[in-house]
Length: 169
Length: 151
Image: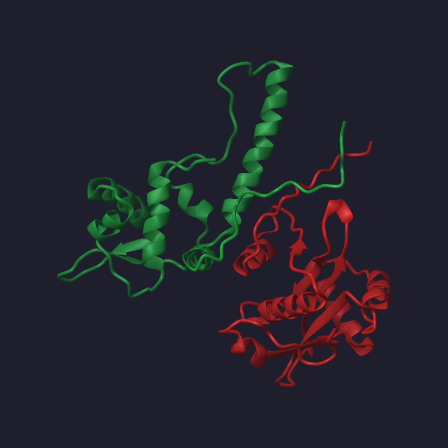
């Protein structure tokens, strides 16, 4: 399996402008303060310990099937990290054959609608393909329209599972 | 869920026009492709025009042009112009526990339908159309896979 840690090639025609706008690569320890700040800005919740644990689990290039990628701006101006995407290959949960799960995605508010999310999506898709899986999944809150429309625009459709929950009083 | 014929025609017409801001089509041209009368389609186009999604094109050819943002206009935006997508209701049994339970389930179905329609823009639909035309759109019938076995 080819390792990341370098610019990840994208797969589709028409994405050249995405590659030009940003460089997608594995997260580095020096990126984490920017990742934490971006998440805090987008979600309004500071959770440094959570991000430290995620970096420990997903930031190591040698760990197979785990991908923590960041979008680095290429013009050298402003914030160096424009977004991140995190995912991993999981197998046999809910009876599913191995598939790629995306469970974290964020794009800097001032860098949206510029292809950053699409470039990261292409990159993690390529990683999952190299890892040998043929299906990618994610979960989005029904009322969280921005990521929902983004994933839809990238071609994702509803899958065969229904998420269920209940209150534990 | 099956959208009303007016909703379906509205989506079809918008998909035809949204491919290009310069594209100009008459109701006859759109109606011919989908096998519907110009009369019915004209009523639909009037509603879309009042909503600002299309505009009547000037010139000898006439017809309509798309006038909205395809990346911002969702299927829900369109369908809501023609039918109520907002509420589940019963024809009987409103005040019973059984009716309340059934309404709860119908609300869940409606919430899911609205979330789906609200998450798909016309731009995304055009991509789906292209994939369908190329034979790359997977079947909508999912085979059930699951770890849970309930006896």
